[in-house]
Each structure stands twice: as structure tokens, then as C-alpha cells.
Image (cartoon, rainbow, N blue to C red; front, side, top):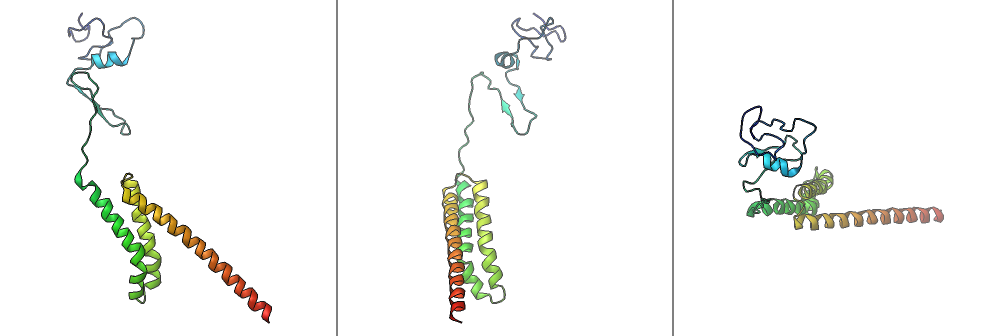
Length: 169
């Protein structure tokens, strides 16, 4: 059978011409299945999806389904690990450094843990499978909970001291 539009020799089982895309079934809607689409696609032609969220793919030359497996790069763990170490240094040594800089002490004490947590969040978003980033996140969550509990205890202690001073006078 020949295509009525371009004259390419084609199989009678196909619904569309693989050369020009002409609808070969003139009466009624064609029977489109995934197998027809794969059969009608030229073997070496790359099909690119226009939807950026779905990416692109290539139909294998032998029509076998194959998966592309990327080998992990050895340097993939170095950057997130380095960022986690910087985050830890900022979080814990921020107070020590703040004591060495007299005028900037309070600002540095506040900003260094916030920057450290921001770096940890970046590592968790950019490298979600990094174990160091996961452990660091859990550590920061536990430290934040302990800080909140400590703040509540200090407020309660101050309240009881102020009430006891009021009952003396």
C-alpha cells in the first residue's frame, strides 16, 4: 500500500504514514494504540516532548524498552558534605566568634544559626538523599525544640521570682 499524500510504501496495518503523518484510515477515526505509534515512528527518529515538565525520550532502535541509568559522580557527595560542615561550624562556633567581635556579637549570635539552618535546608532540597544533610536536619530540629523548652523554663522561673519578690513587700 502507498501513502496517498507522499507515495511512501507502507504496511496496511498502519493508521498513519511514518514519513509524512498522513491519516491512512479515511473513513472514521483511526484506531490509535501505543503499538501503532511505536510502529509508525521511524526507527532512528528521536521524539521530543514539548512539555518541559515531562522531559524528552527516545524510542530505542530495536523497539525494546530500555532504561538509562546514570552512574553517580564521585564528586556528588563532596559539595553537600562540605556545606554541612560549614553549617555545623556556623551553628556551634558562631557564639565563640561573636564573643571575639565586640560590636557585632549579638547580631552574629543571631545570624550564624539562621545561616547555618538555611544552608542545611539548601542541602536537603538540592541533595535529598544525602545522609549528612538528613542527620543535620534532625540535629537542628532537636536543638530548636530544646531551645524552646529552655526559653519556656526561663520565663516560668522569672515569673516565679517576680511573684516571690512581690509577696515579700
